[in-house]
Each structure stands twice: as structure tokens, then as C-alpha cells.
Length: 419
Figure (cartoon, rainbow, N blue to C red):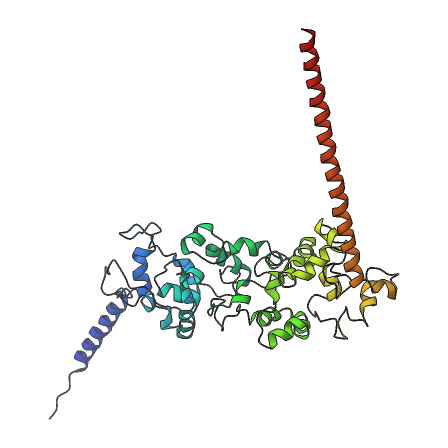
């Protein structure tokens, strides 16, 4: 027959179990195991922490917490993959962080860029991911404090392209581009009310796909410039494509001028600026030298050569973007439209006034025979007058010398006779 413990023994066992549970509850809880980041910050949170080479290895814990990686709660070892929080201290020299582990698409794009190719070739000055985005304080581009925020792009790119020392060391093309852009109409707009919409470096060159302008795929290649500029200047692009220059380019003639040929790349000025009006005349003459020379012979050309802009320039008559040959009825200088074009400045102009040849060439007999022969007559007359009076002056000078020295000899002879 089975024997059960007596009621007293059962009560004693229950009392022991209850006491043990009370003791367990009263005992202090075990300290939680520190996280990987906390372990790393035990050393790297010290702002004076330096490597054996003397470079800072300090990490601002608060800035990392506010960074995009901190928001995602990434661990240090997610980026520094050759470090283990369980095996400390780690090696002095670590492998470079590979951003492509997470950002593989961006890394692939970057590898084919002018920066990526330069670094692959051993140029350590070329921009890497951290040069633009930072290291432990990476912020989203929409954050106003981020170096990749639209308003801060110019300053970020100018760390290299606006530094004379870096430009010289890395032999960067274009010289100090940062200073040129800073003073351009785009650079000035970025500091005004249009800060959020004015174009900055990445609008023209791209972000992670920046390529040399000599590459066909580059946003700034000669063939792609009208489309790149046309992203913002849509109406100007459409007018340009309708014009003779745009048509030549559409036919594959890339020698025809594009946006940067007239406006430049990084020193773009307002089209209302007097200096631009004067400088663009020379740009037209780069291709149309004969017309520039004949323009300079006119009143308009001579006045602009003196620095005044309140007279007609090339664009005043031919247009700025939709430049068409005179044979095209839509051209501003076609026979149908020439009078209206002249009346833009000369309100009382008549058809006879508009028949004036603004590019009359005194050397071109076929274009204007009367002007050719009148100019030839004036040239012969001018040379004849100067030649005649030049010879006359020489003979007169010879006569004066003979009289002077002849009188001297006579005086000397008279003196000897007296002795």
C-alpha cells in the first residue's frame, strides 16, 4: 500500500519552495551583454583617439545615431567586416569599407565614372564615396545639413574643383571651376530665392554617373549639351532645334555651335549683362570671322568695340537661339521680315532704310560693285595724297638742309678771307 507524506511534511516542502522563489526574486538581475556598437565606442568615443599613424579614429556617437546608418541601426561590423567585437583589440590596419556591399547598383555606376576610373588608376585624390557623403555622419540628401543636399553641392564639389592646390596636384581639367561657377548666374541663383531650383553641379554632370565630357554617354558631351541644358531651358532648346545651328547638329554636324559655345560651361552670365552682349559678338566671330570683320566696319560694330551695348549686336538682327539663314522666310533678316527687325530699334525706318547692307565688304566686288569701286578709288586717292605730300616733304627737307649747310660754308669762307 502506497504511503503519502504527511500533511506536515508537505507544508514544510511548500514553505521551502516559497522561500527559494523569494530569494531568487530578490537576487540582482544579470547585466545585459553590451551591443557591438557600445563595445566599439568604448575606445572610439574618445574624441582624442588616434591611430598609430596619428590620424583620428574618433567617432561622435550622437552624430552617428542621427545619421542614416544610425537610423537603420546598423552595427559597426556591418561596414567594417574584418572586425569582430568578440576579438579585441582588432588589427591596426583594416580593409577599406566596401560601400558596394549594400549599394551595389551605385557602386557599379561609380566604377565607370571619371572619379572611379581615376581611383582605379591609382589617383587617390579622386573623389570616393566618403569624400562626398561623409563617414559616420552620413545624412539623407533631403537633410539641409547633408553635404549632398542640393544647396550644398557646390561647396562639396568645390572642396576639390575649387581648390587651387587640389587642382594642381590632381591635374584637374578646367582649372578652378568652383570659383568660375560661384560667380556665374547659376551660382548666384543658388544663394538667392531660387536656391532649391537653380541648377548645381549634379544637374549637369550627374550624381553617381559622372563621366568625362569626351565620352558619348556623358551628360556634358558635345552631342548631349543641348538636351542637358534643355532640362531646365525647354523653350530655348526648342528654339535652338528649329534654328540653323540646331538643324546642323541634328544632321550629325557637331562642329555647329551648341549652348556652351556661346554661353560657356561654368562662367554663364545673364543674357541681360552688358559684358555678355559684347563677348558673344566675338563668339559669333569664331565661326563667322568674315561677317565679324564687316560688322566691325559699320557704325554698330565700331560702337560695340568701344564698349557700348545700346546698338545692334549679332543677336539683335539674327536672333539668339532660332538663328535662320536670310533665305528662310521665317528668318528675322529675310526680305519679308528685315524692315520689322530694323524697326525694333529704328521706329521710323522705311523700306529704303532696311535695304542697307550691314555686312558690306569693300573687298567683295560681286556683292556690291559700287562699294568696291568707291572704296578702291578712296584707297588710291588716300595713298596718292600721302605719297605726293611725303615726297614733297622729303624734297623740302633736303632743300632746308642745303640752305643751312650752304650758309655755314659761306660763313666759314668769309672768315678765312679776312685773315
